[in-house]
Length: 637
Picture 1 (cartoon, rainbow, N blue to C red):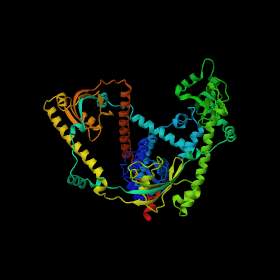
Picture 2: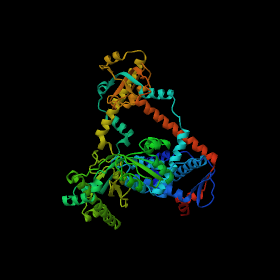
Picture 3: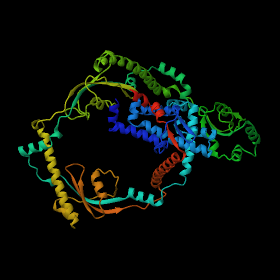
């Protein structure tokens, strides 16, 4: 398995996993290597950056979280051996050290984040907003649990992330690309060119006589590998997904109405209120603040007195469930419009709450949601049925039954493809039908063999099982079997060769001063003038090769390149090169500026973290790393 994963790192899967890992690391300011001495000390301490310690258990948790995250993304868990093969252990270590360096920097500088600010960041996080657009506490709990966090641990991590952002924001404050850089990039992107061109096709290639038997045999001998019969495999598979099973499930109105009654609260639109809050460190300060409120000293005046902006105190239109602190939620939703609470002992401090506008909730009728309820109920039943059938199928497979026999016994439908090549095509060259999209069954079948017990494929909330029933090896085809194909390919090559020669001759004449119109008239061609196009243009009449050639040519230069097929060649002259004036206020330039600024910001933070690691001093206990990642156990086997 480990050898297979190492090989996989050369293909799209390995590259995709590595890309996903690197995206996560970039987001954590953790792509910058470790520049310090690696020394082991203490089994419970994995690394120390200054006075900030990374324990073995902390690193193990980070490492486990990352493996689970990647496993969820790709639908199957990654083993420790596989993770080490991809270098994920070293990347997570780099991330942990980089983050610890920023944490140590924050500690040394005496930086901190208030409970109110941490709470605001959580409430404002779009990942935790429900369908109403406000903070959804159940969604918050569900998401952090799915990532392996308790609420306390998530809040603690959020505080650290906030401090890291403060540091990053400080060292990159004012950093932006220069006007010269923006203008140069904008001109490069927006430069447009116009060409006059002629299109050479089969008519200009002239009559291509049929090849002699000797010429055809020689051509076939030189290109024999192009006409090999590919390897074919006979594959049987069974697909079982909730979506498919739900199509055949009938849900009665009685069942749907029962669900409607149970889910009334979830189906209804909850009441929303415009909430503002001020958090005080002590009950005494909160009471004093509440006592100041009067007709001449408003809630907003109190906020200004405490140096809080409108964005610091405004929670927006929010549901009761969207307020994390239940004490604050109860008080806020017991007030009348424009009411102000008495001091509330909350989780993040003593709070005063003001209620503004109130938007009443609504309750849908059964008829308005019946179709959705029936579909959801059918899917729920289908998921349960799929889970039960999965266990039965696994039992049959574990008992030695192949896919076809197991499916027949369980009343499922097995699909058998008699012959398919690696590209998913049958011997007639047509794509085989019936293979579910996203299952990758064909690729997996060619990575397996006859008699191999293949892993179950997770697919659309369901499963797919497959067996390779037979293998027809690739083989050399004799000329007589593929004579028509060889003849057609020989003719195409002749046409391409003639067109390339004619295009070369025409380009040389144009370079010597001839006019494109005269050359076109001499060969019965029509000169076409293109509309201006950019270097990233996608034009149906001009191939990417032609566009690339045009942008490698100067104004008035002539060029040539293959057209949209091998039997088409384009000869052109660049007639105009233009770059529009750069409008620094345009949306396009603003987007370009943001892209360049992100790149500069990443680089600046990377350099800062690298310097921190060097200045503060970083020590790594490699023995503890090996234990935490499972490498130590692997080495003993």
